[in-house]
Length: 372
Image (tube, rainbow, N blue to C red; front, side, top):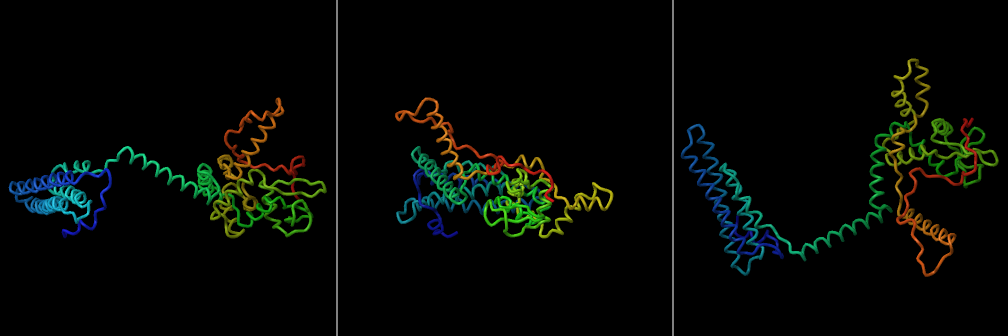
């Protein structure tokens, strides 16, 4: 290694690094240990038997090479400490290199690597002020990263973790549903509260509450989803049956969105996958085909394990609602006093229920019979 190598690679010394005198002392100790290891290896060669002579000689040469390197770095540590032109971090770099070569020399000689204990003397020791500044910088980085994640996802850390758990859950459940992308489109139409059934045909209304016209939706997929109770029908005042996701259907839809790779490319492929799962349950071929045409329900455990993530906007809206309700209760219980702060009953934004509810269908009859 050239002598200029130490002037190029080392970083600048900072507060808390060992002094040049400490670096020189550690480098000399390391060189001494390396030379001692090389001498022990040479002594072992002199006393070795003929069968092990070649191996012991190779170890001696390796230890000697490392000892020479360690001594060279120790010499350069002294030289660079007195040279005003050299980097202030050069003695520290050379001391580290000397310790490294000393450890290698002892390892080659087969003796205990006591030189490794010298690393502790070269470790940077932070002052109380430096440690406090380091912690402040760490907390600031974490706050900046959290702000970036919140801006990108609209969720806090807890709900981002919830999304990750739901995605893992979806990877094991979506393929079991036997759905295609077409089934997802039907469920999304129902989620928009514009899917309805009339005259033996499913349609998506152009506007909410206008149960006429609109584009056609797959009749077969709608019937299959309704039969499996992913959809429920709500009878309107004019007799139209509006279709909305059931609680199980809403969870299944969210899982399918999280893991679209689990959906089948075509209805035939989905049917064959369902057929392979039900063929052992039925002996007759007709019974197997009939069972394969039905969509299986979502696994009950997956339904219960799913937790809907709550966005920051939803949390803020819930928090404001709780504050208004607390203020109303305060007035109802004796009047509002401007000098008294309204008690915050909510404390923290309340979490949304895991299964969303739909207030627009309150008071309407849910049709449990078949659509056709």
